[in-house]
Amino acid sequence: MEELLQNTLEGAADRALSPPGGADGMVFLLIASLGLVMALVYVPIRLFLTITARSRRLRLLQQIRRLRESLGKPLNPPPTPEAAEESAGQPSP
Image: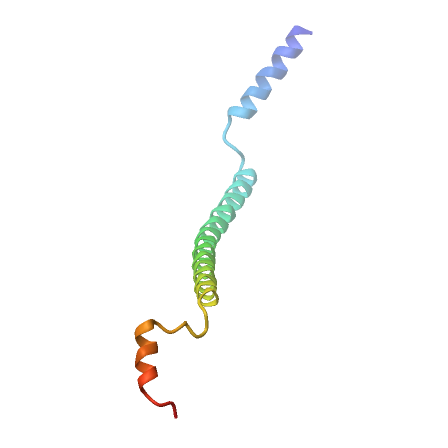
């Protein structure tokens, strides 16, 4: 029993440590290269979309801020005392 176990363990160790066969190695290289290509395509696209989304968001927030400021101001500001005195001396058309 021990001899069978020893032979099995040695055979498994030899298979695990030996270089992969031709077909297995090609499959691994194919999958690894496809993963690398996907990463090289995905990362720049993701960065571009993130940067443009942030700039769009920033522009939108600035536009909202400007609109809030303009809504907070009255449409016709009350005349200052100097402007009231000047308009009092001139006849209105």
